[in-house]
Amino acid sequence: MRQNKMILPTLREVPKEAEITSHRLMLRAGLIRQLASGIYTYLPLGLRVLKKAEQIVREEMERAGAQELLFSALQPAELWHQTGRWDDYGPELVRLHDRHDRDFVLGPTHEEVITTLVKQEVSSYKKLPINLFQIQTKYRDERRPRFGVMRAREFVMKDAYSFHTSWDDLDVTYKAMYEAYNNIFTRLGLFFRPVEANAGAIGGEGENHEFMAMAEVGEDTIAVCSHCEYAANLEKAEAAGHEAAGLQPSEEIAATEKLHTQDIKTIDQLVESLSLEASRFLKTIVYLADGEPVVAVVRGDHDVNETKLKDLVAATTLELANDTTIERTLNAPVGFIGPVGLTGVKIIVDREAAQVTAGITGANERDYHITNVVIGRDYTPDQVADIRNVIEGDRCPNCAEGSLEFHRGIECGHIFKLGTKYSAKIGATYLDENQKSQEMIMGCYGIGISRCLAAIIEQNNDESGIIWPIAVAPFHVHVIPVNVKDAEQVAIAENLYRRLQAQGIDVLLDDRDERPGVKFKDSDLIGLPLRITVGKRASEGIVEFKVRKTGESVELSVEKAFEEVT
Ligand code: ATP
Ligand code: MG
Ligand code: MG
Ligand code: MG
Image (tube, rainbow, N blue to C red):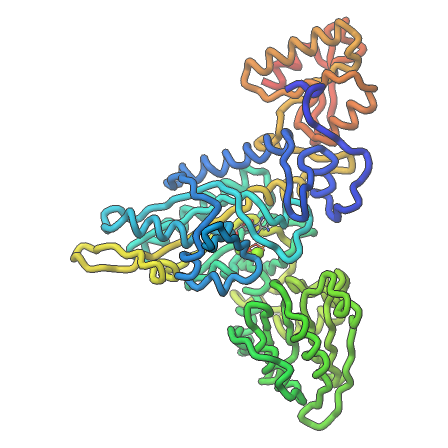
């Protein structure tokens, strides 16, 4: 492609709205532009990367025996009523209404739709197992879209769903998907780790794993054992840690009750009411040590009802069982009145200081921010140490020998054993060998392809820009005639451009009439793996050949440079 005519708007300035490297670079290198919060346009360069990543995913899925199909993004609400997720999914679900007064959703995921399809089209055990996938745009009205395409409201996902006659059979496909995911993320050039995880809104009864790209900006925390192979999402590690330590995490109770009708006087009552509040609006996780609550966290992943919060905080004058009066401490009264970024309530019970702190969380600051509670970000170092000691212990829950180390990661993929959660509700059954009707056993497998782009950049960049891994690079080679008014330079560059293209190599030709400094800066920013500069020594048939990743550069004959690339 010729750069002169291409929509490739690079930016010198660092965009103010972008908080993390990958977001800044995606804007600066002209890969994406924002249309609205969490909604992005892929410009030609960005789209090329997206398509290459999609193709890698497609190849590995097909190699693992999955078949591609394509569902509509628009789904009738009836299906979501059938599974109960119309109510359970909460405000993240984008709901629409048509002119005939019918409800629809824009799919955040496709379990309902695929289970319905398979119910209609597959009725015999002879057709099972089957594994179907699509690459499609998903919609989630995220409470806090941020970091560019990393947490968007419209994004590209590969989702696959498998159907089985037994858990053992599911296990075979699950393992195949696990392998396929390892291949995919390796080919995408990511440094990643599969970790044990919790199921989230997709749900299901069986094991599940997340594939985490390791990065400081990741919103997830991963616990990794120093001694054995154990690696888990923090929440999962905590639950395992509780079990190993004989502690008992309370259940998340799915009931809504009005807090202001309750007379809260003790921590127990507070904890109790928080648990009751764990509806679709708030999730409460209460940790009990020796039967006593030590930390209660209310997470506001979804919308928060402000009246309830106000009442809750008004009620937090507490007395401990031993009659010590606890003073109410509000950390963030402001975030509450002005509901900007309001995300939840945090209660920290410090038994030594006999103090209860209730903070309404608003701004994105330590002690105030609570969405996706992350130890290390949302607590002071002392609190982190306390929580780790009390809640997690420092022993690995798997081998009990090593200690857990904590890293940050970006969830790029997630695989689940669903069991019959959806098939039971939708009625997806098959006839077995004895003509007996059985519910299908399901697995599901997601990859956030557009999020992977951000993760790849997060792991592959330097101060000058992106450093694309070859497999997803928008072009393999950047050919740059330094001075387009120099006929000799242009002739050599054009010739290289054509010959490389004829070899099936993706080439970007910088045929712009720009100063050399501008061309080189843009080239580093865009970050194609190889660069051939046709400059001063063009008349001698000598060009500069440069590797973006190492910065190594050598002068070569045109022929040699051509051979190096091909
Ligand atoms: P998260 O915990 O980051 O909100 P999730 O667990 O809700 O993600 P899944 O339901 O497991 O996401 O969806 C499968 C994959 O889709 C995720 O592993 C992730 O890579 C991607 N994904 C989910 N939400 C988004 C989003 N808002 N923007 C971009 N990609 C996303
Ligand atoms: Mg989510
Ligand atoms: Mg998740
Ligand atoms: Mg997930």
